[in-house]
Image (tube, rainbow, N blue to C red):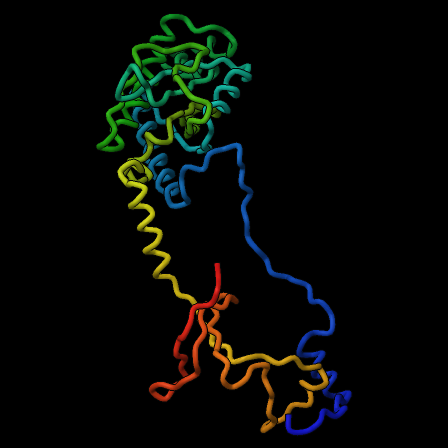
Amino acid sequence: MSNAPTNNLSRKKIQQLLAAVGSRPTEDTTQIESTEYDWNRPHCFSNEQHDLLNDFTKKMAQAIAEKFADLCKGDFNVTISSTSEHFADEITKELSENEQKAHYLAFGSDQSHPCGCIIIPLKTAITWTTQLLGDTESQENSDRELSQLEISLLLDIASPIVQVLSDSHDNFDFHPGQSIVKEQLPLELQGTEELCKITFDVKKADSEDNSEVQLLMLCDALDPIVGKASQAVSEFSAEDISKAILDRLQEMPICVTAQLGSAMLTLEEVMSLHPCDILLLDKETDEPVELTAEGRALFRGQAAKSAGKYAVVITELCDTE
């Protein structure tokens, strides 16, 4: 510096300095929106895919209402109460611990390997069959066993739900099973397989009571609906993946800084600086300039100029791992 440092830290300058750096910690009031992540459940679909799935289920609910209206000769309202994703072991545990008896109708394009099933609670099964038979007295006993006639009718009622699902997309070719299965999930599932469960509420227009039925389906089987990529990972070799990553890394921008040198000053010396003062750095004029990126020295070179701008001629590579 041109002059020896003087003690000119006036009260005003101290106040300005404290105002600049902050005299006390400030409270961080930044609001960060977040949602709870449940590690016990799969997350197969993105938000956009969930929107597509919701649109699909709404159209399916409307079609189911029309099927029920034709079958039972009355108006029905069908709505979606929930759509959720589950691992297979969670579903099997939930169904085994549920004291409420249920009936199942498996479906799939291959009957020997079904991809889903319709879950009909016993109360719903009794409600549907008695409505079809017009037997209101039997409907009051919700804990009784279904007769063979009622189980046969239940197959006739549940099969149109599978038909609605199959008709909803050109890639679906699902067929219902030959019979209703009682109190046993008709799917061979692995513990980590991912399933989607869609719950429908069915209500007859002239009734206050609603019944519930669930569609349980492997998440992978819903790919045509949600638009997931059908290309298998195995089509990409390890070399292709490595090259794609390297190509992307090479396109990433990196800020490179040319550092002439540095100086260590006291706070008093910094406050004493004025225009035209000379600040001596810690390097000689013939020492190389360092080029740094992300705080690491990569190259050394000599200061130069080119096209009216400062430049550095790289002369050596820094020793770095």
